Length: 498
Image (cartoon, rainbow, N blue to C red; front, side, top):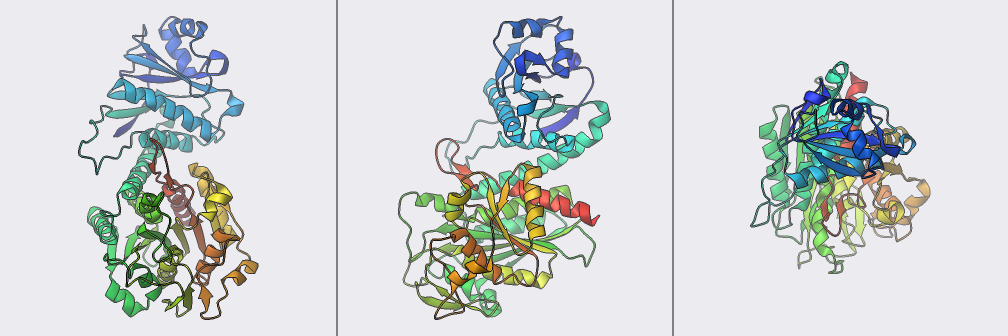
């Protein structure tokens, strides 16, 4: 998709669809007023007819409006100014793109110069417009025999005043990079487990290495993992015919020697639960158990496209969790890379087992921060529903940085406590630590487990179990969260370091 910035006279904009805002009580936004004047009051007359009131996300498509070069004009409702926020802004963009896709136009211009949300930052308003309009064009057909019809829409333009053109250009470039990163994450998440294996993820990382000069990928295989003492990670994949992989992507955009920020993704490409077998209903969705890894791939893609002046390492712990005669059994005890021993009471609590060794490995980079991302616990869905990512951290400042990044990116997150009292639930009579702590506070005790391996650096855990995918209907599939949050976090770190 080609995005571009345009300015000038509204009346002379040549496009197949011009989108202008109608505010509450059928009030005209500045761009709409200019279009109305050029059309000798034609738009005002339409509004008097009551076909659109300006309620948020209302739409009305007009053809051949006199005095305008645009072939169509889409009136888009934005409601009352006091009610505007990112949630309603996105609803409006989604509604507009629904009309645009149904008409089959090849070009569209968004001329939305009213207050779009309660976030007054023009850069973020325009970036969100790019992100959300681009996200509405995503479709998955990789595993279908009949591919989707080619997209007719070729260009989305954003109309801004000339004095804001440079800022808008930055918004457009950053927004496009985030859209591309989210699309990568969604594609990987949506692929079935028979295609998206640990080896496939490794191949995708090597392709990123080929694509971006500042990125270097290293694949650690099972033999090397054994030499490193990563027996916890290896224990998860023992029941599978698919070899496990530790994927390490190093991006060096910052000064040599500057400490990197590390992203660690859970990459369970399919999760049966192992010997602690999951129920059959809905098990197909366990192909999404690598969405933490997918978000790392997405964030690394966005980062590389933005060419941020920062050093970042992306680590993906990839394995397939299957039951077999070789599979790890409940009660087995394994030794982690850190030397700590783990009693595996439930083989379906496998995400923390691959992550703990990956987090120990992350320490060798002497990181400025480490953030792991995982579809770790169903308990997080009970706590936060499908709206927010759970954040747990050994550093409250880091947690707040991530929450702030989530608010800026409109990819919300919320902090849960990580108190010492919860650690006692992981006590084991036979090993240093048990891999589960019972049903109470399941999300927190999972993070407590990970915290045992992150004492040497600033660390935060993002539980994306509730936000990584949609489970039903036409929307079923990976969402691409939390690529926007992670990318915004890295943008903020780059700005601070500069």
